[in-house]
Length: 191
Image 1 (cartoon, rainbow, N blue to C red):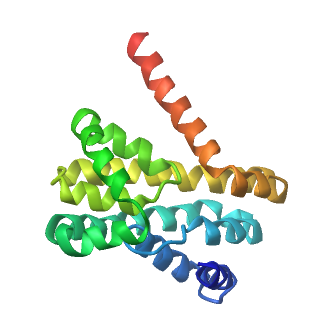
Image 2 (image 1 turned 45 degrees about the horizontal axis):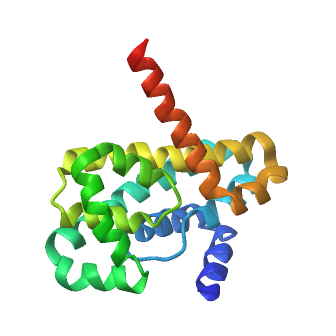
C-alpha cells in the first residue's frame, strides 16, 4: 500500500500530472485502493489557480470510472465483484448497503459517494443491485463533485495551513458538509 501511495504522490508532480490524476480518479472508482485526494491535494497547493479544473478532472474521471465499477457489479458480481470487495474487506458493508439503497435510493449514493468510504463499494453495489443507471449517474456526479470541489476549494482558499486538517480529517470534513447540505434541503422543503 505504501508503494502505491508513493507512486501516486510521485505522479502528482509528473509532467502529465493532470492525466495521471484522471487515471487514478477513474480506476479508484472500481479497483484501485488509493483515493485521488492523494494527488489532488498537492496539485492544488502547487497551482491554486487551477483548483476548479483539477476538481473537475477528478469528478468527471471518477464518475466515468464509476461506470466500470457498475459494470463489474452488474455483469460480474459473483466472480470479479465479490473478489474486489473481499480484497478491500468490504463484503460486510456491501451486504449492509442493499437495504439502504432500497430505502433511500439516490440519496444514499450521494451521501456515501461524497464521504471517504471506498467509492468502489458504491459503484459495484449499484451495478449488482441493478440500480437505475441514470439515477446512478446523477447521484455519482453530485457526490463526487461535492467531495472533490470542497477539498479543492478549501485548499485554494486556505492553502497549506489547512492541508493537515483536510488529510487527517477528510471523513469528518465531508460528513459535516453532507450533513449541512442535507439540512439545507430539509429547511428548504419546510419553508
